[in-house]
Length: 362
Image (cartoon, rainbow, N blue to C red; front, side, top):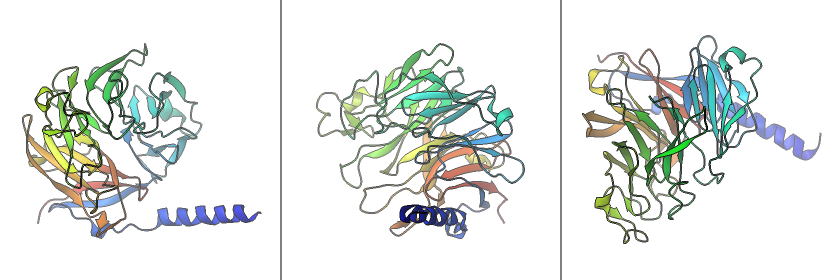
């Protein structure tokens, strides 16, 4: 065995050992009555999607898609490999849909074939192939269409509004793509309100306007085609230094809630379970992946936005403690409500999926 082969073998062994090492869950802070546990260990775990008996997990750097049987050992099985940033996964009618930058792929009848997974087939290759903000969270809406965002291919620029900085919906049967929201810099999480069925989504603010600006956003799509401000306006009232002179902030749909600056708000879900206390019913849980260039780290937590109708009445931490000082040991990416009402949280940095349960206040 050559010197580099030995080095790589040792490196992968160390990496595997690190992934399997116990995680310091005692550092995490939750509201009274809640507890958190490790549900599964999955390398570079990103978006999650629930099948009938299986949890599917995308990755970014690993290039793999994983399946975790909900019964038994919960050992992840690789069902696709060698893909380009397969972050997004969505399950419908027995098939798994996967985003791979410019392509949307489908694995047919996947739960029946976990031992010998089907080859991914191309549903659409019509999306841009830039990797800057090119990884995609995907989900099926109440209308049966697959919703696919496309981020801006830059920090701040004015790209083609029919191709970038938008959220689209794809008809898998015909390949037809329709833009439903514009002026969205980079959404990596969305869900539909359990009662109104309106689309809500997180959006990541631009960089290099300082530590405290602009905020990330939680937005609501009240009608198809709404514009949410990028690149002209950020956070509802911050005119961009470069593009803010051409259009006024008042022209755009304002956020429901401004989130922390540079928290990297990613996956979000409405809580439609019954396990958590009533104050969390229809609240929005958000995975805040954490800042990368802020002088003091921000995010690295799961937050919750509680609502009255369409109005936010609270924005507060729900699970905190993945960052200690200037060192982070975990980075939340996505959240998902299980049928029993518990909440899953994926973590691409620690290579883990956690489960949050409510056991009652004492």
